[in-house]
Image (cartoon, rainbow, N blue to C red; front, top):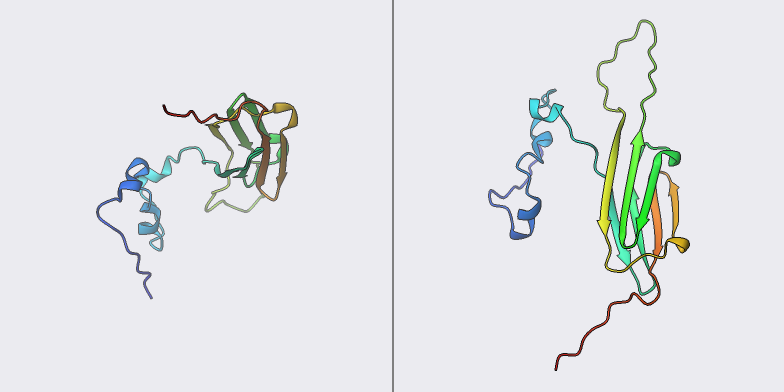
Length: 151
């Protein structure tokens, strides 16, 4: 049975900033045993993340599967946070075998973002488990935003 997918020919206003006309091309070619030529030149994998905050700290959950924790680097500079990861492919070839498809390869990923408040680097913590990086980034004291009264 065919999968029916509803698509709008006109992107919503909220989607215009991240509109990619070829984003769902993989779905169009799934089941045909082929991929379009333009998709052979994939860009670096993107680190997906969730960011939340409370009065005292920011919490980041970043998906970085297939990478050893030694290959992940997190840099905090004031209110700027950078995450980079490098995955390495170990070559293993057996005699009498041939590779038909290889989707696991080496490469690097990078993600950088700016927060509203500066981070207290001395209290920041990072934990990596099962492909998920969790950062706890406490806000620096005295750097809370101040709301001005309009006269």
